Length: 102
Image (tube, rainbow, N blue to C red; front, top):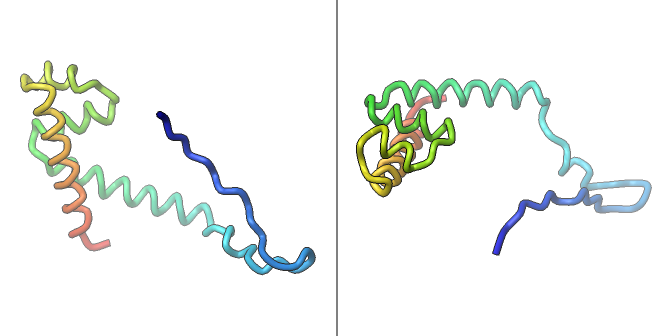
């Protein structure tokens, strides 16, 4: 079984000459999204920088799409321990980002 993302189709509710739900599909200014994304990225990388050496190395390898096997060989731990550590790191990063003032 596989899943795939299906984009919603554009729906306009109302009379043919008077769409009332057109505003539902309007988005913010793309420049706002870029600033928000850039700011969130900076906060994330700052949180990663505060991690310990091994955890930071694991996150870096994870972001480089390394396999658990490769990470385990480099760090010297089992593949299952890599998964456990990454799960804990993600939780710690999420907690750290949630606590930071925006």
